[in-house]
Length: 200
Image (cartoon, rainbow, N blue to C red; front, side, top):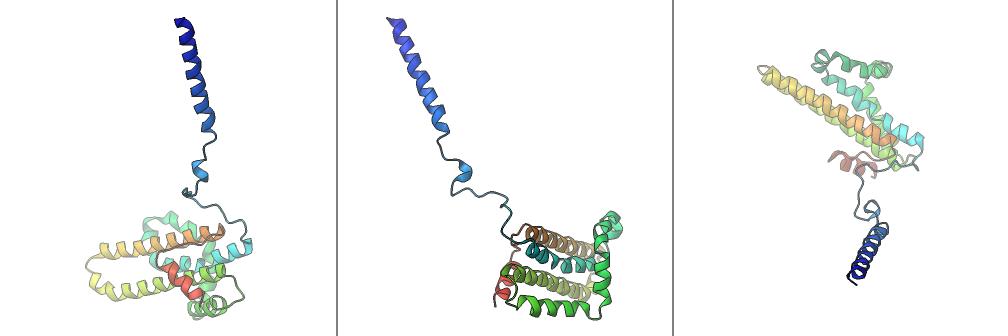
């Protein structure tokens, strides 16, 4: 009699465990829940490649201008110069045009950012690249003014210049990758200003 009771209890326990395991697969997946946010957003497959590459090309401007702050880092890290070798022909053309930086700036601003012929994606990235370029120019101007005061502290000057260089390269590189992925590159404060200007 007791053996029958034990067998029935074991059968009940086995059925309960099987029920639990079976219904685990019926539970909604965490990844598909509304609260789940993936760390990396998927690539935007609907964005034409012409717009992706066009948007990424604008960030060559701040990337080239970041070389103004490479005077300290290149002697310390010569291998870093090889990353910029593909840009040499563009840099030569960029520097050969009289008032090239000014002409390119106004050409992009009035010809692309303010034009309705281009998509919001192109206009936004064009404006964001110009804003990064403006920050580079302002930073260079301020450093030239403060350089005499910091002349007695060369380590401070070198730290500021290297920080600006890596900051601009990181921002431009991140923006180019996001543009190629068909996604907007969100840079704090700068993206908001770029979005505002590109929609005016």
